[in-house]
Image (cartoon, rainbow over all chains, first blue to last red; front, side, top):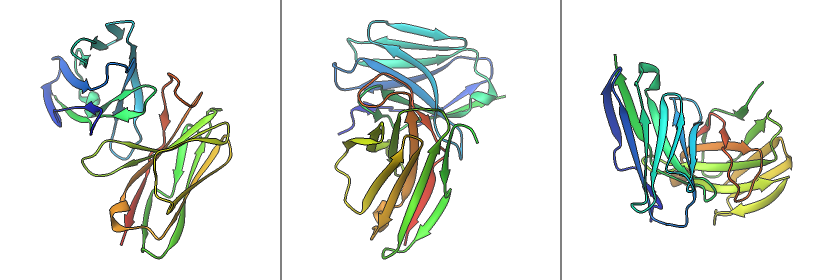
Length: 108
Length: 115
């Protein structure tokens, strides 16, 4: 059974608008989460992380929100750019569980 | 070379062949990982090595045999594979291994096809 779920396989957003990617997890003991992005023919690259002692972490255009009671995290990209088009994975930091990924397309 | 490199990038093998995947990291990290990614499935952790010692084996069949001669190199030896083993195999490294909070740096992967 999947410990981490990304229920939206794909998302299309206009350039300049907000992209919101979602991730749900099953175990309330998970206490650290990471987001990676992956371009075709490349390995995933680390984007941003969050510890469960926080409910928000921001890095430039990227913000991750953590809702522990709902066991839900989301990645916000504002403003979205065409170069953000990639597959985004969430991961539980020290348990090595990954979601199946959401393919984001930013339309110019 | 920088980052994490993997060779070969593509591999086609028969079920009776023996082949090896190679991973090298140029980041000075102490932990290395093998992952398998099958179509429409999440990345699955296979093995973790920390300071050359295997610390995780995620119930991987013995037809996959890892080797870590030093902290910079990781191999995955393959023999008598099955068609369902066809997948993308990703290598990663991180500063520390085990159940620690640090990001991983991934190689580009080897696309394996078993006929």
